[in-house]
Length: 244
Length: 110
Ligand code: SF4
Ligand code: SF4
Ligand code: FES
Image (cartoon, each protein chain N blue to C red):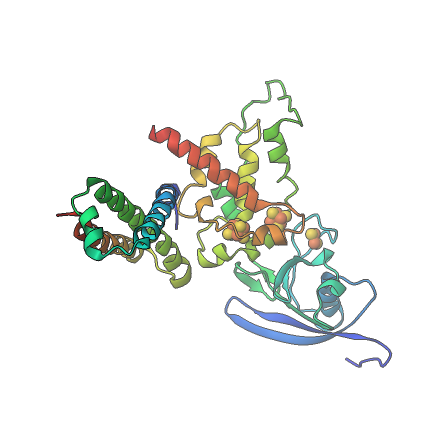
């Protein structure tokens, strides 16, 4: 690539490889006024190396598919401005932490979603289609608690930020546990005890160290750490009830 | 590596330990103020059912609490698993029970 004299360039390192291993490759990418990390990655793929593999869909922070490690921190790349996170003019983009790599910047999200299911993070219907629709009072305290987690976009940023996931691969992780907590507080969910049992095993909520990386990094400003504290409280209460 | 049962055991043992630590420290500070000798201290603790129960419960709580705490660290940092992890957890618990138990009996039994 010929560099233009009057253009500013970013020094971008992008991880290239697959599950077997790989290394960082350097690229020079023209710097623009308003530019996201995803713009930078797309520019490389469109102008320098069409073989670069990465994942995105919506580009507006809705779909949760574009998360990557940027200078060591997990971020949603479509909503992260280069100016905010570049180290001078340097960027280092890597696949999301704590997940198997498929190729380059694309990780295998299966373990992340499998854990949602394992945490019973799925709806357990309490009514059939013949029944009246349940009236939900938005002011109800359980509903308020449930609402606080429903904006999760499944981006796995919190999962990548969690040191407990890194140390204990069985740990269900912040997003799945937050989902379990949301459903536990949902009046329409019929299997509260099933949820509590699902989050009480060796990979369950009790492994969380409450250091809050998940909450610090969640791009939607959700608070999985608080949701997990709620699960710990409810499981402890149900444990003491059973012991009596 | 913590399920609900281990978590509860660790929290409950911590709940016991907190007041024990405070009483232990308070009594030590109080006891040495007048310059108490070893004999004088042992004279009061040996044969005392109260101090026996106090320190015996303390030792049990400490053994349970530390064994579970170290189990988590061993799993997350050293990647120990399965039988090795169980043996380590129980081993730590038993060593602490044994050494602590020896100290308690030496100080409180006649
Ligand atoms: S608070 Fe819990 S879930 Fe969140 S990053 Fe820390 S250990 Fe993981
Ligand atoms: S809790 Fe936040 S960081 Fe975690 S998956 Fe949901 S939106 Fe992403
Ligand atoms: S591309 Fe959809 S959230 Fe970033």
